[in-house]
Length: 233
Image 1 (cartoon, rainbow, N blue to C red):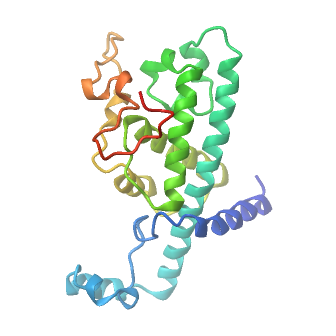
Image 2: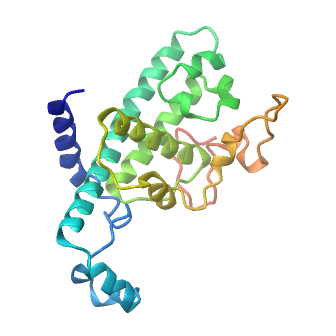
């Protein structure tokens, strides 16, 4: 990857940053400057914290703003790549006589899902997952809403996996520990990480909690949680 290509993707991602209207730069980890806050917002911080924010050098803040904008553009861009790759996975599955863990491990996105359920990721599942992932991607623009089901939480994790792939390919200058910050915002109180627990030493897959069972992945967490009609059980 040459420098010109790196510059091209950086400019593209910075241009995409403005499309991510569903999440503020502050939610992505950027500390606000006290001068940019309303009086009500300032009341949420201790005077010492406000002084510390105001004392950040102009150059350092400019760098932080640039890094966070780059992260915003990366998330927006990755949502589109994620859906492209899911449709590619769907096309591959439709050409198979049977789904095997080996085929899933070689896929673009489905390989990021909990491997112990790999044999269940057939074309029907993938269609529903695409619909849920599309809804997650739309939230990045219309206003973020917490995932309404396990499948939506997993779609967020797949989105962040794709963002990390792009980061590695282009060696992007992103905020330190950006994924932990974004997960804290997008996956607050999420339980789906437990589905990735490694097998026991004897190879026995760990038993998933009933609430995380595969048959529950597209079931809304609560009556007020939204899951697209096509994907709902």
